[in-house]
Structures are given as structure tokens and as C-alpha cells.
Image (cartoon, rainbow, N blue to C red; front, top):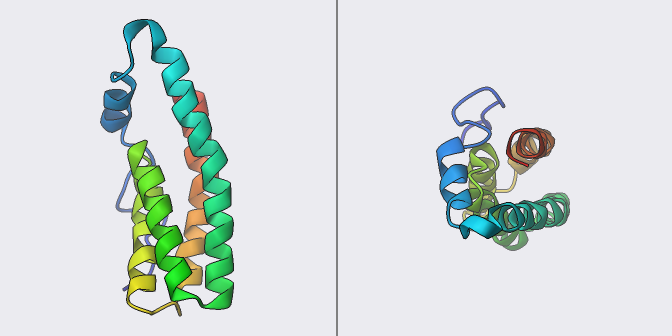
Length: 126
């Protein structure tokens, strides 16, 4: 795997079409509550998953890196947080391949991406 993409490369922070499609799944009279609940779950889950990834990288634990990367990939992808999803996927693949040497670089980009993702979701979608 190559270097992690920088924040302004490759993927959007948020896939607006995907997020709007998710928002449209709610019942018309429940749209705001449904969507806010999904975002709150995302905001609660991400810091814990990032902490798990920190631990996995520090311990050079490929199994934990794969599992936590996979969990964050799914959590992010479900809300159209594309940059986070792709970075988490890179960590998952590194863990699966037992190659954790460059994981700290990808994880550093993920730590930069989460606050930007959270801010965009809060300011443009809540």
C-alpha cells in the first residue's frame, strides 16, 4: 500500500448524494429525529473506534487493526463519510495482510479527517 491520500485528494469528505438518500429513508414526519439519531450514533462510535485503532497501531496488532478498521469503514460508509471510509479500509487491508508498519501514517490522516467530517455533518446536515 502506498502513502495515505491527503485530505484534499481522492475522495470527498462527505458523499452528499448518499447522505441525502439515507435521509430520505425516514418517514416524512420522523425525518429530523431519524437522521439526528443516526448522526449521534456516528459521533459516539467514531472516537471509540479511533481509540481502538490507536491501540492496535501502537501494539502493532494486525488482527485488532483489521477488525477496528472494518468497523470504522462500515460506520463511516453508512453515512457517506467517504474519506474516513477509504482510510479505514486501508487500515483494514493492512491488518488483514499483517502489514502494520505504515498504519500510523494512515491513522494520522484519519485523525485529521474525523473532525472535518464531524464539522461538515453538523454544519450542513443537522
